[in-house]
Image (tube, rainbow, N blue to C red):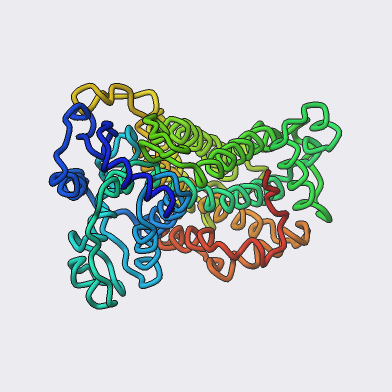
Amino acid sequence: MKISRGKVEEALRGEIAVYALNTGVGLLANVRLEADGIEQMQLNLVRSHCCGVGEPLPEDVVRAMMLIRANILAMGLSGIRPVVAERLCDLLNHGITPVVPMRGSVGASGDLAPLAHMALVLIGEGEAFLSGERKPAAECLKRVGLEPLKLQAKEGISLLNGTQAMLAIGCLQLHDLNELFQSAQIAAALTLQALRGTSAAYDERLHAARPHPGQVHSAASLRELLAGSMRHRSSTSVQDAYCLRCVPQVHGAVWDSLRQAERVFAIELNSATDNPLLLEDDFVSGGNFHGAPLALVLDQLAIAMCQLAGISERRTERLMNPSLNEGLPAFLATKPGVESGLMMAQVTSAALVAEMRVLATPASACSIPTSGNQEDFVSMGMTAALKLMQSVTHCRMVLAIEWLTATRALDFRGDRSVSPMLDAARSAFRVACPEWEGDCVLSGVMADADEFLAKIEWASTLNVPEVAHA
């Protein structure tokens, strides 16, 4: 970083125009700056790009943004002083989290508005969270003994150009999605047991004949979850419905999407997304900040969530439908007719899946020109990331409802002949969501089930098969 900074200072003494170093930005790139306006321009960049609106991003997202940005700046290709990256780490270590509004990025030169709000705190302006309280940034810095930074040439633009907001969301959501995949696998296995289905469709030889990695993985996981079950298939049907029989094919496709996202995110986490970059002795202007690689993957994940939630909702409906649920009470009510049972929980599940289908509309296909048509094809990656956040929340609740429905169906069966692993899963779930009789206010029960699935440690305590990362 010190070497590249020296080259920046050398360029400042020269006559060659270097984008965002001694020129304006965007459509103003042809405006040459006087020496006394260079530092002011960097400050103005941060202030003028703070155009975010809406609720603040969650603190874990902003902290991830800061960490990723510090990592990228430390590559030494941006030409900034080391103190800039160090100060981001100082904020992290002192628990200062900038207030960053959710909306305002089109993923063109990266996430300009979110990163500007992050950078604003470095110069002692804007707001931040400290110890759970929202305060002026200057007060937060003073409380922990930090001085505001005075940005020098190239440093404002280097803080703003990049994909760190959409990437932070993507990485954190991917972490949760790995857990949700496990939840979906267990939910499917519980439902199969409750409906007296067969695991014949999970035969290893069948999936070896179509060896998509996710499909093979899902089938193997289901076989392990069902190992030791004393249940036998129903004699009323030759084969199970798709929502049971095709779980490896559907869940497996989701698993493959997760692994593709993991590969893309891993590359982006260690990629220089500034502009221009100092490559050897050349300042090279390019488009590494463009969010297209992430936007496409984020959209794909939202579509994958529709698959995971959609097939789960179909299993839930089958458990409740007296024409399809293998002799279980209608809507799993203790006294059908007098009680509605879980009828409306399935309606909520259907409503969430319907909304997820809207959220799965690809943002990356919806470029809208900005900045005087200089940024004439943008990624909309941040829009894709924000949609994904909502989709993951909805998907978790859809799966929570299936857990509630499948475990209640097994309670009605009244035997303990499920597999040992599924019995352990059901027992752990029952601690969070005890059995009940009669009708009750389901929203509270559903919230408890959702909270259970949201706890990242639960799967490891049950020793369920782990997701094998690529």
